[in-house]
Length: 310
Image (cartoon, rainbow, N blue to C red; front, side):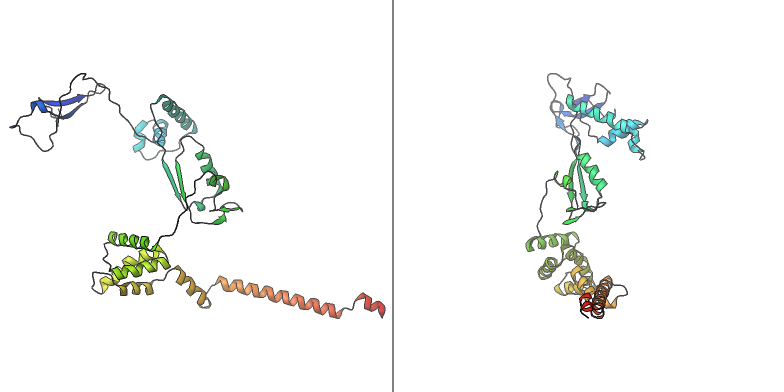
């Protein structure tokens, strides 16, 4: 057979399919002079009742069950790629069947994890769908992340914390985060240097850590490879302080870029700040002119009481 079963081997036979599986070779039939390879495994010879019930656990997702039952090809539809539209009737039948299996103890639901980053980019329709999905018994574990404060909910004119509707926030457990410390930032940059295969001196790493604390961690991480290229250009296998300084002068961070834009705003072709300032000046001049006209009218036109006295 395919398993190359010989006398002295311990095997199992599947009663339903007739499949023969080789477990190993019996200790009672082993001899010192037998020719055996490194893959040979010795097992104890079974005793007592030889017929046993074997429980097989299959792990499938609810989507795979929907695809299998919505196509004529059965489970082969999973490999076709084009699953097409799944009717709501099929989903309802599958949900009812899965609920029946759970009650009988034949199946257990293992909830998945749905992670949504930048969740403030979703609109009100998406939030409504998430609210409805979380009410289901087979809902996944929802993990969302955002860096927004009080902002407007997309698709509405209302503002809420993190740009998330209040009814959805009430269902969530909010985890607060804190900024990295100096030692934590240094450790992250050190690990990143190892991943990028970059040799960096201790002084250069200290300087890079200070830059990451003053600007941002992402900016400091991007500087690692650029500093490595600068060091490679001067025929050095280790990044030094002058390499970090060179990269720091070549590539600016967000704070310095904003400062440059504010200082050199007159040099750009289009600048909305100047336009807004001009509009404010025009509004002030218009209001000043209207005030002057009112003063002139008040001095030019005599009052009714003065005319009666005359």
